[in-house]
Image (tube, rainbow, N blue to C red; front, side):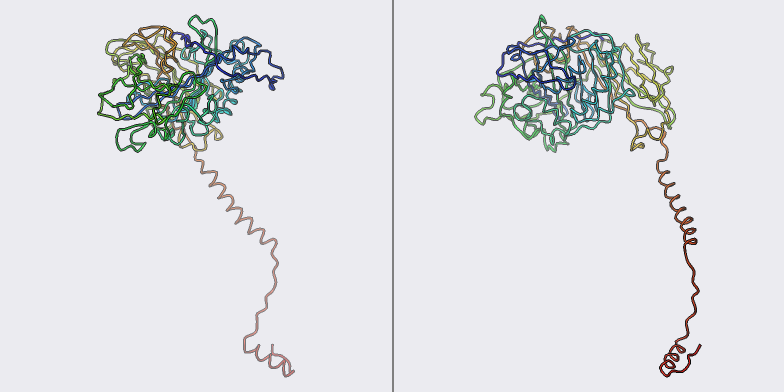
Length: 590
């Protein structure tokens, strides 16, 4: 796994307006000492982009990318920044306060089906994922990590505060910096996942507020929660990293890339036929670009057109890009041009399917499941597929397993084509009960056109009764395995620096023409643990209350009750006779 070096750079144009906010840093109690000049403040830049890729299954994949470049550098010790124009101030203060070099966070609802949809532009596992590189000047990385997760939990209205040392690992090779720098000291890296995190509107709203135009203009007007969450797959992410501003890297900038990927299912959306449009997908059409954006474009993948579908309106602007080892052709709609919207001043793309096509199988695919029976032992199976017909290539497998699944590492086996496949690199960090999880990293060579299976046995631990979730019989989630690889490319990858390079093809740096970087996530696991009968406390309470009510109640009643002699009353005949005798004044009968 080579160290990628970020090469995203743009010719930054001067822009109008700048922020001149200079306030006290209330948390440190010191006044900021660095002020941006007007020329530097005017070099901030914002770009937005939407890529629409029709899928052979009849579904449609839409990928939003918003990139904000911030022309500043506060990686130097003691340097602080107080001018924020396009870059959100909440994130800028987080980077400065906690000495963050890179930050990657994603919230995903659903599972990306690689065999049906192919590879996504930017992959992410189900639930929440957070991995951060800290600056090498940080002395207490765990303290910064804990405080950072709490702050991000408040910014994105998520449950990131549940991230602690019991679900945090320090990968040694799987997650290298994607921006500037060639950091190899994994002591400053932290990685954690929350596979059970539910993504909803309260997570989307603060994400949209980070955009310079919010959701009022540009491509962000399409981001309506009632449509986005009524889909088969939804993922939103924030990536922050330092990048170069030119090819020679004479100056640096901070890049904030906000991505949102969504897959609309043909049947879930209630479509009677294979026909999609912007209005059917998002209940909106495009009317303008974001006024603060230097670039606002919509790309439609027409590589399979006109055999698979028909696109209208047509556009003469075409673009070719090598994406994930394949050369694709796109129709480009530039929202900064008035002629793009036509006479109706509205852009509503329409795609009509003509037939069913066959999708090429992805070269790399992985899946995972739990085997075994009972609630004492089990076995984790991870299956990795190499679908390349004649090329073998290595992959880096990372697995983080909670401490309550006690791995038997001596049972680890790796087989390819019914033969043992000895990993060339193994890094294993055993778990500590209630302190840290297991971490297993392996470099495995995948033979061509093969299936490689990794198995390891485990034993379930018995938790304390206070450590169970409110619904323990639902099971406990185990985060996805991560497979990273440099996959051989069918066509030559573009390693040259270009200013007009689309955002969707420039996220992961490309250093070799013969291969491209791919990261694949498996399914999360749902494991049942030995669970006590939590209804017994209720039964004990009911039985105890019954015994107390019957026993103590009867005893108390005997102690406090007073007894009186009740004389028997006279018959009715004698009472009538006594009434007459009392009237006549004669003695009464007894």
